[in-house]
Length: 402
Ligand SMILES: [Zn+2]
Image (cartoon, rainbow, N blue to C red):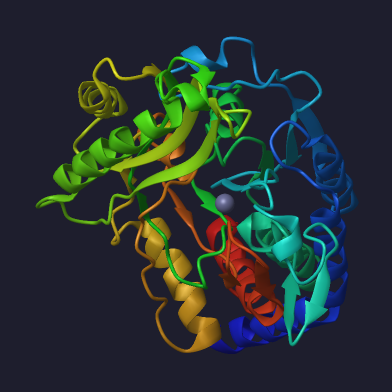
């Protein structure tokens, strides 16, 4: 038996190696299909074509109009038409598995600061650079490489149902994943190949998105009169950081970061600005709920600004480290890389939370090694895609074994 498994492992490894260049080319295609919020459709078609090539039955599901009302939903603000979630299914019998990735990427921040155009992938020193290369298009390349290698090396091993979901809005609401789960796309376990540096990521903190609108009173600068909306925002930001300190006090599993991510205001240097808008991400610890976190934010802001909750209302989540799913992925990792995987601290959120919190389905993240995600010159290490695919292929084989 041991010998058979060893031989099977070797066939999988060889197939991963042989097919890796193809997977990198798929990743380049996917990075080049710019997919920030509202324009995910082209990238979704790239994924759909790849899933069809691998023999998945491919469907497209649009977010329902009432998605914001589902328990656990974030607040979607972009119309859902023409931005479907892509679902690939392979039928089978026995224990099932779902792979979940998101094609949406965050904006490039400042194109001029990149060493190459953000949506023109470049390879350099074993890394592939581009917005979304790490978060998380490399995960798609890793997962499709694993599936293709397994189909080549050991087609009978994929006995149980295997599905692949490619979602939108992971970076702002999670509503893509939530909508597909409500549409019945579920399984006995879910793996999300987010870039975790080949570590296990089992948990996430609470995240709330808040937009504050401050109203001042416009005037000519020379009068010394008026009320400056931009300057009024500064003490308000300080108040939110005071709340951040409170939320972090004595809480484990942090830091729970409050980040001012957007700021707009004013339209003329010699005019007192009448309007300023501040977009904030508030991280919060369990056992707080998004509603309780929203109350804390509302109290901190008082009547100094209008508050709009415009994205994440993410609950904290956690998969126990000794769960069968975590142990199975860890076993596959150790069999490839010789030692158990590290544990990545969960100080952000992922779509795994819906499977765990709303549907009682075990879920975790495991994927390649990236650098500067959400930053400048984001990149993924190509070898980590290959190593991760070897791990994932072994895990899929063992999880879906007849
Ligand atoms: Zn991600």
